[in-house]
Length: 298
Image 1 (spheres, one colour):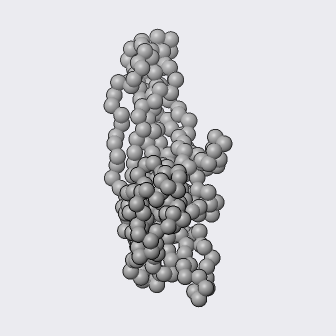
Image 2 (cartoon, rainbow, N blue to C red):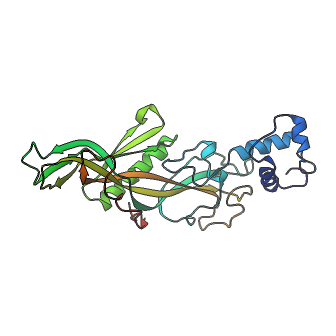
Image 3 (cartoon, helix red, strand yellow):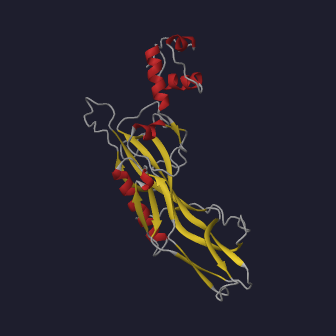
């Protein structure tokens, strides 16, 4: 409590007062007109609390972890998923406070995967050139592409990362028969991981001229959506899901945080470009596909 103000109300009020610029001097803080009974020390604590908060789009192409800045309790705005929806991955980030008489909040994070959606990247010149003036195979030219890969930001928690990767592999095995994935961690020397399809792509181009043709490609990927749910033995205020009802398992949801990762599907081979083209002559392939539930039982 800040004086006679509940913590959550004080913080929400301060978010408006703070704006984009934060004052640096004590007298500046006082001049802002703090809530009655709120000290500068309380204000600074609230300021630190606000700085932890992030919106539901913060973890696109990324897997959250157990750091305080990944805590679903601090996410602003509602999750687009229903509590308990999807396939459970595992439970992590336990705060280890098991003694109710001493510690009020025993909390942990549950991980769920919900659905996936096909998405396409725009055409990209592969650098491969076929000059039909110098080859006799232009009536049926076989094109081989290297395996397709995507890059996402990895979780800082190895257990979460490993479990989600395991589920992604099972999803690929089940919905894309014969096309699994492999992973490379700390890709490019950063907190990133690369996901690559285990099969290469092959296509055929047919030209009936003596022109010079450039081979382009477009990636077809799957974006997998999920969320992190912060669970506690006691309801809490000041979160994006304050004072929720007790769940059937006897615990409370105090926050939900959405995330998504993109994984490779296959590559579309484009045969329509001339060697002199700076842009592929056709529109970008496809669009966003329908949302498909993650298969149960994986």
